Length: 356
Image (cartoon, rainbow, N blue to C red; front, side, top):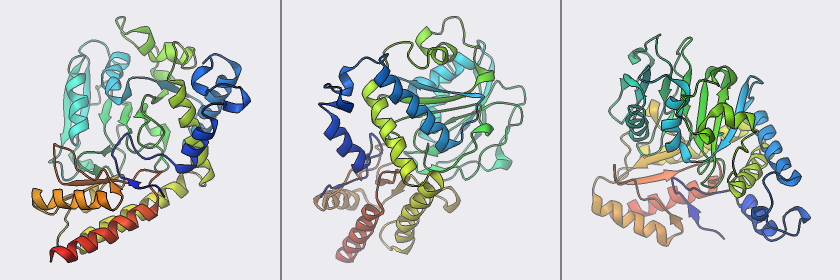
């Protein structure tokens, strides 16, 4: 039996997908070669790419007036590529600061445009809708729906009127249904809910294409990438192939409404245990608690370390919190089974009994 992997990313993948990858590794689709060894422009791989986009569009209900791009560089590259593709030099943009990754996005954007802070929070909650100070003249509004390090998640989608809304959904993409039409652009690193590291998803409204600055490298120009069906240069074919398998796995679960119910059950079980505990606590406001990344602690670094070490001996791995916040973090992405959360909750209760 595999141990339970609570890593924040690269994260757990569905067992069924890993088994299929293993079985096909040396002879993919009867080709006599690994998927890593075939041409990205060949008919066989083109079928993988087309099916991946089709399945993604079905799962998310992506409208026809949006392009789907499979890119490289991770979400951190998109911190720069969004302003390079969507703004003129030093054009004003609005950013909502909700934690570690939104701050990273702000710092990078400031290299390319004039950033205006539309709202910020203290890391235990997200800004309320009434706190958003949005400029109707902004080129776009950027936010991070889920902060993996701080463990906060927006319970709402900001209303930005005619200003395009940009979202870094690296840790929440495909975890629940969303209305794509409310966004100008969505981007996400694959390594949490979609597949292995190396692939980056971009969903962009077609009307926003063609705005890249002249100095934007061709391989990072959204319009050029769209025109070439994400094959402008050699893509990360193996990561794309695995992502295609994950998308079929998600469809097999019954779609994103069913996935959302699974994820809610996992989060409710863990937060319920935290709320009932005298030892383990979370400082995140109830209305902003992340479904994907549950952060908690015992209150002392020594006890936290003892818990993390003891949990690992029980097959509950990668629970150490990010160095910026300490404590523990349990990431409950799509592929984490409910049984893993139940095992963690039971171990927390046993650890607390021994500490009493």
